[in-house]
Amino acid sequence: MAQPNWRVDVHHHFYPDEYRQAMQKAAGGEGGAFPGVRDWTVARTLEEMDRNGVATSILSLSPPGCRMGDPESNRRLARLCNDYGARMAKEHPGRFGQFGVLPLPDVEGSLAEIAYAMDTLKADGIQLMTSYGDKWLGDPMFDPVLRSEEHTSELQSH
Image (cartoon, rainbow, N blue to C red; front, side, top):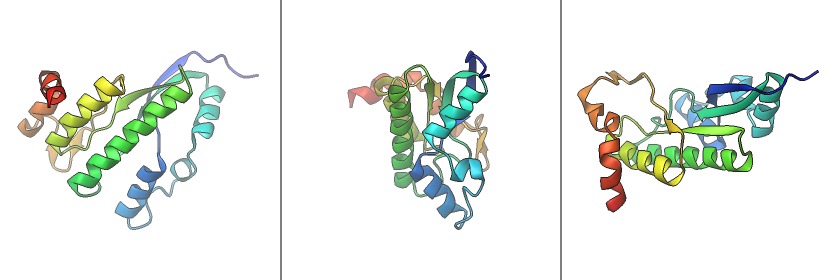
């Protein structure tokens, strides 16, 4: 007998095809080897949620996040992942929320993606990793991102 769905999973990884491909390329063809990553689908994640009594999952990326290529590629990958998560939420109302994905440590690209994820896609928040290379979130280089509310109106006006 299936459990009633009432739980909220606030740390639910999703794997758009392009993200899995980037992981594999970054790992020299070995990335995404875990069955849960390699075989991930929206249908399978919904089945797992139902089997475990999860009503809603908030989507976020697994490490390494959108920082596996050059800054422009990372920006494109973050946008693609954010759009993919928004489609999942739209196609399955109430089942998925979304934490916006950023191309950190690219601060300028991240500020633009915060504005897009929050204002256009209506994300539930922003996903941050603990560190980016040898830089932790407390590093002053990330101050503009951590104060992003001050910048979203500036970004929208350009």
